[in-house]
Length: 133
Image (tube, rainbow, N blue to C red; front, side, top):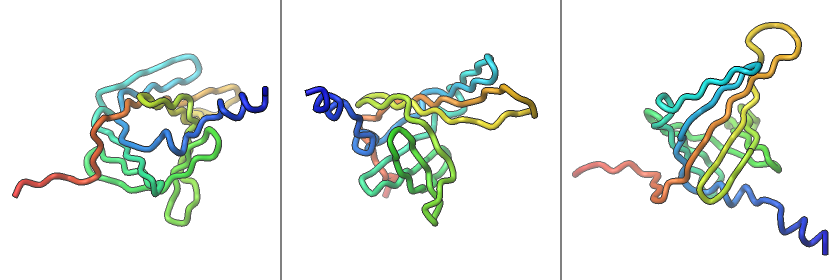
């Protein structure tokens, strides 16, 4: 019975990530200091579809393949090699939170630096741009 409960509680990130996500804000953490920005990222939209392609559209569009392995989201290049990775902190029907480890800015031990991206799911996603006739 315990095994059944553990299996049913596992998250299905590959299905739950499908749809269009709007960046709400981005927080940067560095050795105890936090900076949160919503203005520079508010136009970013990520569309995850069933063929596992993520489309990022801040001022244009960029198409990336992606893969999810357990709680890690990988963006891939054309050779299917990871170019970026995020830890999925939270994924619900309405909210996606991704954490990205960042390299230290200076040399030295015991430095912690990461970025957290907060997304909300959009109700009416569209991959096409509408053009007036």
